Length: 85
Length: 393
Image 1 (tube, rainbow over the protein chains, first blue to last red):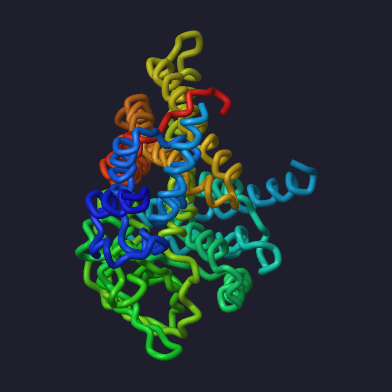
Image 2 (cartoon, helix red, strand yellow; image 1 turned 60 degrees about the vertical axis):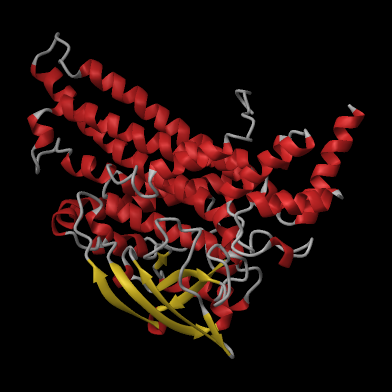
């Protein structure tokens, strides 16, 4: 599974969206789809667990979780930074 | 701060104090009768304070959030209902001025607001959303160039006295509950069917009755930015800061009354320290904490202003939540201290040391957006947010 697919799966499990995640594109706005701030935190925790990463404070903002692609970009960049460290 | 902006700030303070003197004269009557603070709000309009936050290009004075907060604090010392009405109006102005994204209609409205000193109310609360303003049941309906909306609004503060109402709803009939927009309706574009009375312990003059709102307007009156953005980047922070400022004002006036009581006692028996003096010192320390809390929040907001990333950051939301919870709790402790100092003279109505109205008004602070809800929200964020342990930041 690609990063985006794993993330899609986690959004489905933890995003508590009123719509089926399969109906959303990678660029669909998750907040418009009904992602609440509470669910976004649960999703964040699941992502940290899944990818063994920690979101830095600078990424804890709305834009990071705006779409599946935005999350994938964020996860990739953290993984890269952690590998480089 | 350059000399010109300092002069403006002094001008605003002086105008606010003049309005506050009028508001203060009628504060007890407004409270007793549970009526709109008409005299106070007329005085605010006469001092042309309604549009100060509007940028100069749209006819306002471009006042900063700190300057608006100072006006709220000054009014709060005189009449909490006037101050709260003014603060809620300014929260709506901030949303419209900040998120109309070049909409000519909204720019024209802001100009009118300044010219005519219009009062804007807000309808976010709704039956069936469980107090969470980030959810709507009602949906706005677009028919050609017109939008139509019906909302069972459990609370519209000073709705009957407003010139316009900013109403949240779902963006369209199929939208998720959190996919919301804000629409500004003018007085001749809506009707209000009264459904719920506002007969409360305190803040009686905000007249936050419930209504069924029914409105129809040109679709250009829908704010272009999604409500999610407005709430995250402006409304929540501005609410907590302006409320915090006027709550500080309520507590500051209570401390002033207690100080007056202690000084009168000291004059009666020179050479002895009155029994309330130590408690007054304690209240003064607590009041300084409240002031520091609000001022730090205002500085943080101004430093982040215009930067969507910083305004929507979790650290910012945690800080604003902390201002709200901290101030709303501490003012009750302060006013209770003052009541212990003033004794029966504070407990009685109609004395120069009366504190009943202050205490009752202040009790609303922990309920308007329930502190339990805010603490719950903060506790969720603390699962991932890393705290900034630096002192100066």
